[in-house]
Length: 166
Image (cartoon, rainbow, N blue to C red; front, side, top):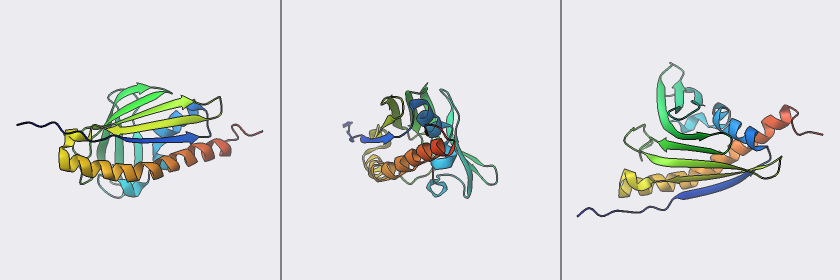
């Protein structure tokens, strides 16, 4: 019998002291500035982490020798409000195109100077019960720190550019 399993999504929310356009830009095109290189799934050492804009674009790691590793594929690209990616990483934190949990990120303007970012990582059941539960545990513990790094980069980068400073 084929029993369908359900694994609860991971939901994280953070408030960023930056306008929505800036927050989306730092999350996507500024990925190399806030994503820690020791969180890589591909060849080490990592020289750059980047996101190719638009549906079909990739979240990709580029090693110092030029090797590219796809981490995710973008399925929804609606700047500056919404981004969805198929996360193509297995429970052993290795690239695997067959693994397709989903990361859904929404950016909600809170006035003109702040943005609420809601991240939902879900569809772990596509990985199977044991692997899906393991991935869920890992990302539940990992996303808060990563989102904190992102929020700090968005706020610091904006302040260092003199934006929003009286």
